[in-house]
Length: 212
Length: 212
Image 1: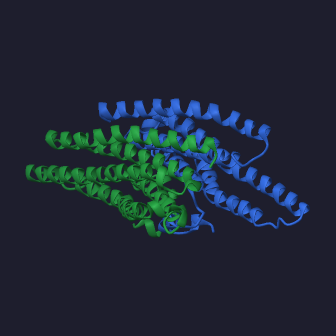
Image 2 (image 1 turned 30 degrees about the horizontal axis):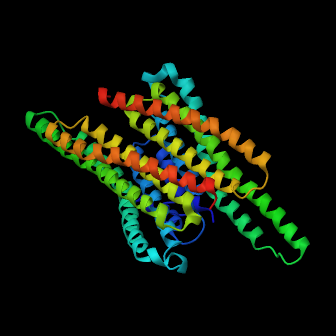
Image 3 (image 1 turned 90 degrees about the vertical axis):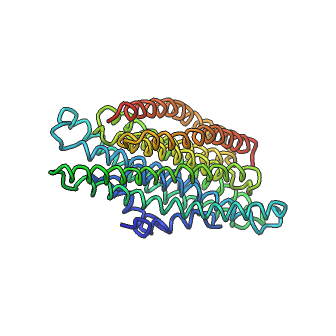
């Protein structure tokens, strides 16, 4: 089901239900999309205003990338549920003969890798969303400073939760080199993201305390 | 507009747009609702199963409270946009005579307090959502352990982002006793929430590393 076209309430109900999809992986991508949306909001309140003319071109670029990230993270919200479907389908393959067992095992491993790569893409997109929030702390319309802070928190939460969902797939993938390569890409993004989000949050709170 | 009845894509687009609502306060409540939904999902995969009969009654209680919190946080997602509308309406009141100025000022202060109390309610509901996630780490179906982790991250992000949105309202409220009472309630919730979320996250990651 394409949850993007369904009422917000329907997505929340489906998440809460006793059905396996959507689950935390899909929701992590959605929270990333909401973070990207807030970056876009801040950029939309900055671009085209005389007061922010000096950063106009840079904020226009932020807006263009942010809208790409929002669209991508929305797609991943749905793709996560589809990837789970392919794992479940492979799981149901027959396993009576040796040939069937081997075919099922290969299909499972392939489906699990595809399922790991959806949250991997969400980690990457969350990381870029966080970088854009960091750029907007100084360049964005200061009236929306709290929205920049929320964007950064959402981006980090999306990254961390997506990374957890990569990890739970890797637990079933019997390919050490593959698993190592994903972990090697994710670890430095999470490390940098944690520090960057803390910096943005501290700066946002400082600006709020000083008065906007 | 009741965004709960609108397509998910419409909410994301409205968040990204150059309109003041919805903004980060509404999105914070929504992320809290998604966290509550994930707690409900885990509880729904636990209740009614022989294997988890020993915790059946406790997890049923978790599910009932979680569904209440999800409904409340969904309402706050919309209420936040309505509260902003009342502040904007007060701002547009006439201010030519001294009487008009005084009436406008009083209306503004009242509207700002009402606007602060929406994210305050989200902080409280996020705090309870986090407590339920903590309960589900040990009592919930371990196949859904990553969903518990995501629920905890979302609950903390919702609390922190809602608290930031309380704070930006307090910056315009000229009632020190009122402001102090809200801050006095929020600070210990955030403090406890930060520690609890870290504990849950560490335990979830430990379980994922050990294999489910």
